[in-house]
Image 1 (tube, one colour):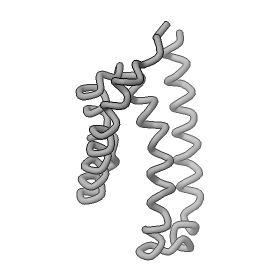
Image 2: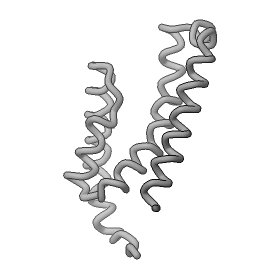
Image 3: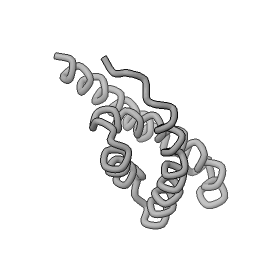
Length: 109
């Protein structure tokens, strides 16, 4: 069982996490990739997360990033255009949920 992190270490990591998040999001938005390609090496390398913990944290932050980007992207791509493709989005969501469920089951087996 893991112990709680040392508050002093967490406090010292906060500025690095902020700077890292800013750089990662700027790079990700400039080149159009998801931020996981940059965030995971930072979490694992600099902050010493175990790989699975880093993936879980990355997955938890991804919906927040998408939700925060929607209002800014609405000026470029109208929601009506996106809504017209709802079957594709629904299938992607269903496939992602199924894949996550199967993957989580494989890990615990």
